[in-house]
Image (tube, rainbow, N blue to C red; front, side):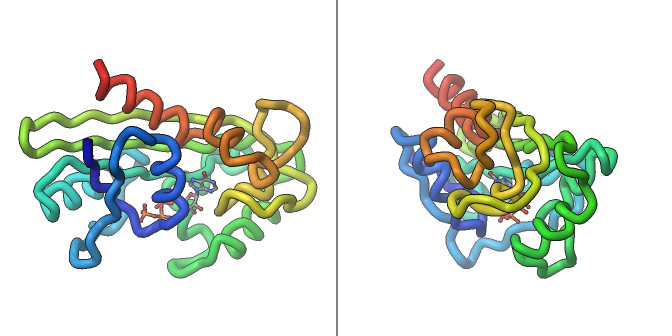
Length: 189
Ligand code: ITT
């Protein structure tokens, strides 16, 4: 089976290729334009990305809209996670702002909305994955991407940040891993 992944984020492509190993995950063609992310929820943003990719490639597509929610900020940055420190902010700039605003030990959650769209049989489905954790005292680790160096997942509970876990460990507990496994189970059912 083949699926186009509607993303411009190479880290997401790498993670989905690991997570959906029986599926051939194709990158999005450069000519396909992704819509602006103006939705109020992760799902609102995931659907248009998946539909644009399915239309642009004439095949089934998936899209991930994801981010981090901080209790101390009433759930922000949420859908604005990629642009938290400005429209063209780097991962390092976004992480620095979150560290500045959330106290050490503050509750955090990663969320992933994964939309599946198949234009051939009109099948559409949404899967949501969550992963809870806390703010680290300092950025640690060089694996993963984005906010991983300051996110201490509740599991396995040994104090390591997401960026200090192996790929297999991150996949087993991450928001994206959880959503991807639900998609796989549904595709096989
Ligand atoms: P596409 O829209 O092209 O898929 P994007 O990077 O802009 O790429 P999002 O709009 O979904 O994707 O933004 C996701 C944000 O949340 C971005 O700042 C990421 O760094 C962060 N994020 C999502 N999943 C993450 C993960 O597993 N680890 C660390 N940060 C993550």
